[in-house]
Image 1 (cartoon, one colour):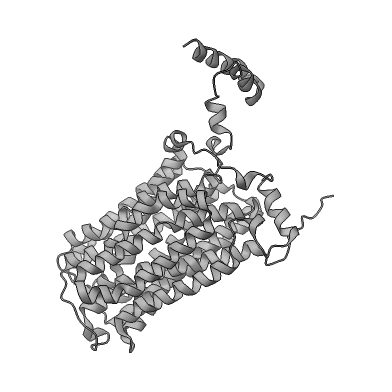
Image 2 (image 1 turned 60 degrees about the horizontal axis):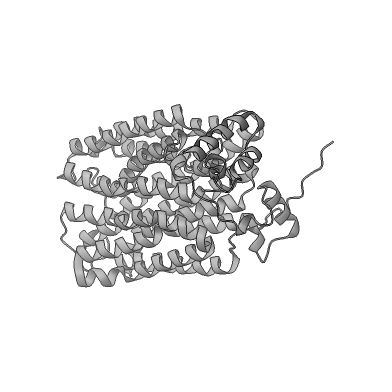
Length: 490
């Protein structure tokens, strides 16, 4: 007979934290991705609200605007990982989101004074603020999610990406055509960010121990499942930099995320321009059909989530096999459809829309496939791993619009867009191949709290031999003593 574990309320504080992260990611992506629709509205006032200024920006200038967010975003990933370990996730996420909202609210003012250069500048500042947040999100999930629920809670929270995509594409187009015009896109984005900050301030906590609202049963369930002792949250665990940066599973994850970032950023930033130029769709239709692929992505994220739960609970697949299977679907299906997209024209609008919807929808499996893999590899250093991965992966969206700007000189030229989509398809294919060979969902040895002590025992004062003997398994004692003796001789 087995004793049923008391997990606390059906909807506990760990679920509240998941909801808060979902809403945060939604807000972040609304502020990050509405630029694709905003730029089209600002340079083609007749298709939106002609009562607001129109700007004559070149394709190169628009490419700078689309990529400028990531110029700032990549520089604060490591900082976000460090700050959340030093000061706690709650404070860092609050101020990062609040500042992002402020910069969004100031965007129309900056544009009116400084044009596209000022637009780039305010987007860089927004990138600085948002760059702090995803390392915090992964650390927060690691601290709040029991291992058996980690995949579910992590995937649920990350569906905010798809929700944010839909809102950014669809609502931004509707707002641009409304009485508040394209400036309203920035004001609404700021409003939802400030609203989230209020909820986060009241209901969030760095960990279950610090929560004011958690029940005793849920607190015990979370802390015992994570195997935390009373001093865990007060301990700063040293970071094994060398082990992390030479870990094959981590490097495979890094490459896969960079390749996925290229393909998805191509679709996110360029879908409005492609539909407007090649398919000749007006802004109202553009807003709906630009959002449609991401609506499919949002729906598919729950299909993947339910499927993952069934496969894991029924022991049909190991977590590693699950991640690789879902990642293959998320990378290789878009690989094929992206090539197909490049061969359609105005006479085949429906085919293009279907292919883009399939491509983006299937890509939502990458959340379970690779996005959450940082927590698998190292719960203790999840924020640091996410900082490294996000820094590298978000250099890609800086480059992507610039490459598109170099290749696509005429928005209506289908052959130029073919090159753009084929490049993305090749990277999708190669990225998943590397993850299949080297990736894993097994916690790595360097995640251990005492890993550095085991690998580099302190030498001196006659205690080294004793410390090594006590720290390592019996079969390794002789080798460790020999290494320490050699070190003392030197």
